[in-house]
Length: 313
Image (cartoon, rainbow, N blue to C red; front, side, top):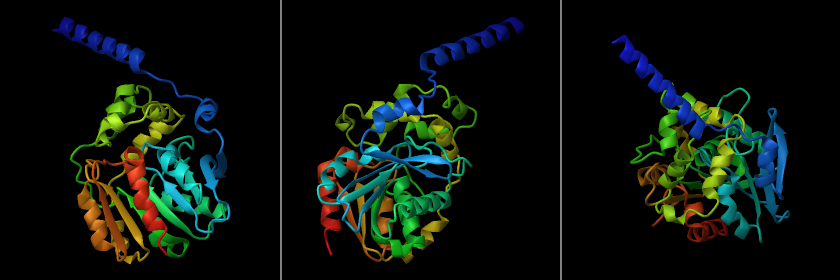
């Protein structure tokens, strides 16, 4: 019996060693990541001891800039296609949220929505943005509507793209999200990050994974290895889901575009209809053939909807 247990223990240790050798990845130095993902027009701004990665592009005379906020695990690059088209006549601002991209973790490891809203307020204040069109995807959408509820005079219009907030009823969840919520196992994510976990998680938020552009999976993987990001991702996913703040949605009266992928498995269209019911000036558009990130999966079609909304008086 003892011999069997000994061999079993040796087998487990050997398996751990093999998995670590195959999938163990060190953090990628920030300066190395910057060379690839912070090319012009990237800039950095100090907030709360962090060097926040952001881009401020387009028409500097635009008095009503479009501010775009990405979701969990993503970066400002998720809006690349939209931005490329929009900056021909608009000012577009986007940033890597703390915990993601090149910005890295909050120093106090507080990933509450309240902290993200306070962070966004500091960011916009440093850029002297008095009023804007504020948009966000997923977590970014949750930050956007919470910010609008707290700072109504600073948001002219609101854009919610598959936004979080209401209790989630996912029909499928990315594997990285699931692992990050499992005690003990999630600790392995801080040093063992199989590329297939990242690939599977991205494919999960697309309706049609074949639409994922070349280089996108590698970018998500590389930026996940930024020092501190893997622990920050786990910290963020450990938070209890608090939907009590959704009571504030009914107080938002800004014109709001509710843009949703009809095949979003992470935050289903049930949430889209709840936003429509609770927002006094909400306009719901559901895109066919899109998942959780329509600005990546169907950039041209989703951008047409955005332009139609933002260009209205």
